[in-house]
Image (tube, rainbow, N blue to C red; front, top):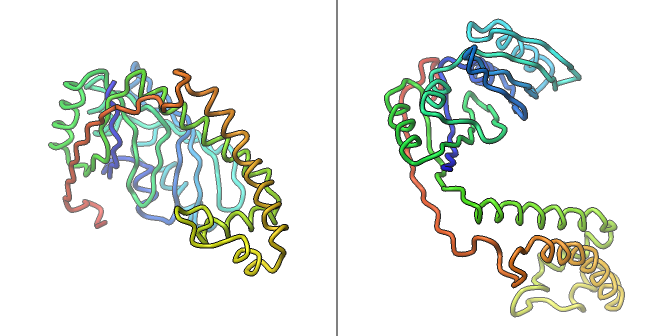
Amino acid sequence: MINLSLSVRQCDCPLSAASRTHDVAFVTPHWHYHHDRSSLELRVLAEGRDRTALEDGLEILSSHEGTERFELLAKSGSTARARLTLGTTETMGTIVENDGYLTGPFENVDGRERWEVGFDDEAAADRALETLDRTEDEYELHDRRRLDPETVLEGLWAETVGSAVLDGVRELTPTERRTLRRAVEDGYYAVPRSTTLGDLATSLEVSDAAVSKTLRRAERKVLAPTKAALESADPRGDGRQPGARRETGRRGRDRREPDRHGSA
């Protein structure tokens, strides 16, 4: 599987039209492409600079010629949730015609969408990019990489460890959080160290013993769940991160054509 990370400025997308015209942004966590109807069904989260910007953006979504169905599900202050069905845009049509598929949520800010798109082989990905070069939409390729079992395991490994770190950080008390942050910022964990326990105690206006005790408590809360995650997520049992020797390909394109709607 080939995964492309793209940012696209579409001329015919209602979401792009709304975020380009008003100070509103959209995130699409759930979507489904109906091949039989050539339409994309979305669940959209919208956030405006204020309530007026949000409502103006939603008005464009509901009235745009590319919108087949619009249903406001919830609205509170400057945020909203909506169900949206769109006709196939030129860029989406290019992806679908080359057997591509969206592989994750996408977002739309300032008239530009960030997409994660998958293809089953290199040739299909190349054909899609070559076709996009001939369309009126502007796009930029940020990353291109092959996903194999090792890279998938690597992503799961990183997610597991990251979640463990966050869980540990959430357990920190305000004092532990402040002390640990100061220790990191002042170089207590640098090699060689650029500060001492005494220096930290002076800056925090507590005793050396208090700093040492607080740091040990903080370190235990952060490192204990991290160690457990490392052990459970390491399929080899040798401490090496999955995919450590993987090589990734990268290919960049950047087309800068004038925007039909007057945006830079």
